[in-house]
Structures are given as C-alpha cells and as structure tokens.
Length: 157
Image (cartoon, rainbow, N blue to C red; front, side, top):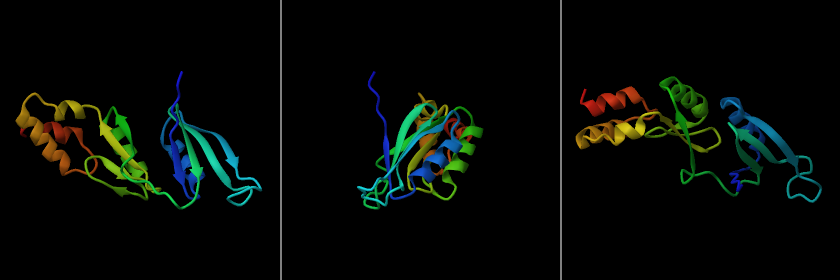
C-alpha cells in the first residue's frame, strides 16, 4: 500500500505545533521525535522532526529554519458533522491565528485550514440555480460557516 505523508516545514516550532494539533483532534498522538546531532545544521539536541498522527493520518513536522513559510496554496480541510463541531474546530484552530473568508482560517503557525460543515456541497449545488447562488453569496460574506444560515439563504429566507 502506498502511503503519502505530508511534511510541514517550521522554523523552530514543530514540536509545539504537533502538540497543539494532537490536542485538538481525537485519536491523535505524537509517534516520534528526532533531534539534530553534532553534524548540524542546527544545535545538537534541538528537535529536528516530530512524527504525529491526526485521527490516523500521519504527518511530520520539520524544524528546517526560517526560509519557508506556509501559504494558502496548501490547506487542510476538516469535514464536520455538526455545527457544534464547526464551532469547536474553528475556535480551537483559530486561537492565536486569524479568520479568513468562507470557512478558511490560519492557525497560530500560519497553516491554513478549511472548516466545512456537512451539507455544504448540497446547499451550494442546489438544483435551483438561484438558491445555489443565494447560498454562495451568503457564504462569501461569512468567516466561520453556519450551515443553517446557508440553507436559509438557499431557500430565500
């Protein structure tokens, strides 16, 4: 079986970020931490990589230096079954970060997330094109998504 493991490049905060993420998602854990040795390029003993799992998906945080920063070109989508889940993930992930438009946010490390409620595809793909457009217009005015407001917009309420 082929496995794809995303690597996330940090300056020095990879371990903090991994601990933050595993504190938010159920069934998550740190699986390994490796440290730089005498060969460098960072001081011996400092954290080089942190292997972690978020709900079974493997990731690696690399403390590679300040050369690269996150952009919105890559984001992680969190599909939520309830509005309470949307509210919880939005609150936790945006703490110390910044909200974006249409359910997007940047966390305190600059990583982009999309917090998406169940039913979003249906409301935006409403068979009534006018309803779909009303829902899209409503979504474009939101930061955190509210599925009931989007459904009401689609209905014209």
